[in-house]
Length: 174
Image 1 (cartoon, helix red, strand yellow):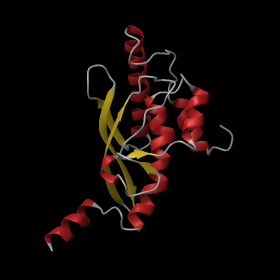
Image 2 (cartoon, rainbow, N blue to C red):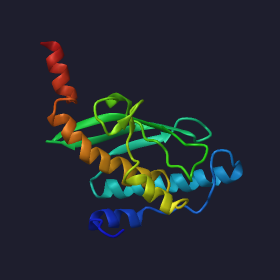
Image 3 (spheres, rainbow, N blue to C red):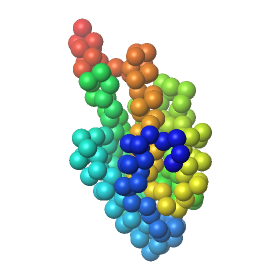
Image 4 (cartoon, helix red, strand yellow):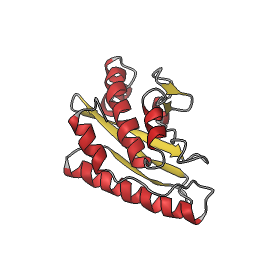
C-alpha cells in the first residue's frame, strides 16, 4: 500500500478480507465464499453511505452468485452520470478477478475492451494476484471500478462522448 493516498488506505483496510478460497465449481465452499462476499460488500456499502460516498448498487442476478448486475454512478460538475454495471464470476475465481462491464459506454474510450469491459490489466490485476484469495468483489469495486470511473468519466464528459441524461433529453426534444 506504499504510495497510496490516506483515504484509499483507510477505505481498503476497513473492507473485510475473505478467507475461503473457492470458485463457482466448488459446491459448499463456494456458498461459504459467497457469504463472505456479501459481508464484505455490505461493510463497504455501509462505509460509503456513512461517508456520503454512495456510488453503486449490485446484487447477484442468479441463485448461484455467478452473474452480478447493478448500477454505478459518478458525479462530475455536480451532475450524476449513472451506468449499468454487470460482470460474471470467472470459473477460476478467486485466482482471476471479475471483468467489470459498463455496456452503455462500450467503445467510447480506449481503456475499455469489447462488450464494455473496463481495462484493469496494468494497475489492478497485479494487485489482485498479490492479494488472492483475500480480495473479493468489494475490493474489485474499490480498487478497480472506482479509480477507473474517476479517471475516465470526466474525460468522456468533457470530450462530449458522454452526455448527461438531462442534456440528452433536452437535445432530443429540440
